[in-house]
Image (cartoon, rainbow over all chains, first blue to last red; front, top):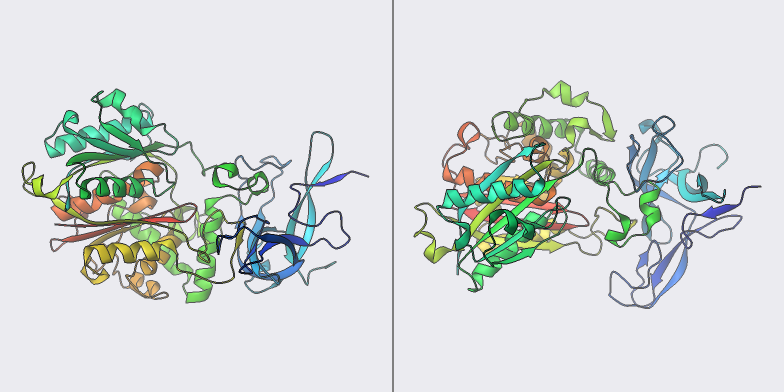
Length: 145
Length: 380
């Protein structure tokens, strides 16, 4: 089986049966950030801890990326194989809105306020043949949710 | 100490294969100097910037090695606004009497491709396709339309006005007026924004000569006055470009605070403004910026657009030269183009795109990544 490697350590719990997004919370003011950061952008403190943000939320806003981005975009796609993807901010129960790719890529599939479910998706292969995986969201009531 | 604008120059925005970005900046400076009847040797300082076309202080090789203080400014889309603010404070403080502000750029075709590390972000953010300004502006207006009852009609009307104004401006890049239908049926780029609702990165240069207002009349019979220049960055809770996450609480955008600061400095209010330039890198941002700068209530924009209030002959003429939509966005020069245009309007020299009724107060606003706004107020 292909070895799966997260595109960046610390964005989501991995490996895990039910992966969760990870962020940070300020011990002083309670501010939540994604990705986790050492300093607090609200109170300027520097005492934060890594917390779980959950694996579901609601869609706060969205768009669809219709053309293949230039670098630094780095997928296995070509202009021919590129598939438009949704992008949105998902309100997490952990208390922050997280920007994410969305599996839905048609306007009639996306609506502000709809429930969303975290998924971990294969994105590209690295030079060693590992499968690089990323986090994304899809509507929570779609098939296999 | 008051600050006067006594000269201005512009290298036409668009594509000029034969000139580098730096050379287009030099053209703008020479034109501004000629406009003021001054020489490069008389300039005591310069502030300048470009995003992709090199170091602004290299202009001394083009314009003359006079030993002046030249400071490079790099502040995203707000580079021009930040340069102008720096020059404004240099004169206001009494340190200098006269100097130049210049911006220029030359971007490759297509969308910008920023490097995540330059913005304090992990590579994953860019690699997974989240770091596009077009996406952000689409998502911002998507939510704004949802919250404030704005429809696609308003997005089309902003673009229609921009290209109409561009068609009246011989210095615009896009000089063909586009019909409502052409805009409304152009390909969708990032919902809800279509092709003709976005500006393109481009090329060009713009320059201004600033002077201690007490001495301005030695050089020109019709100085204009820079009554306010303010630059502000984002607050905790404002929704800004290049943000992997966004706080749940909502705060005013930096535009709101920059605008308030500028009005306070000038002692003027939105009701005093006769002609204005608002950052319109897409149709949606012009709509949002109308309210964020205090010119209307949130949600009121669609009605104002339908009534033609923001057209050249309307009560609140916005982006009279065609804005970013018709001029493109050479990042370093764009904010100064806005000031060039309001100066042209206040002098009554805008020709076929002149606002009627002798406008006396001009307002400019830029917004850039990752959440910085610059506002200037110019008067006769």
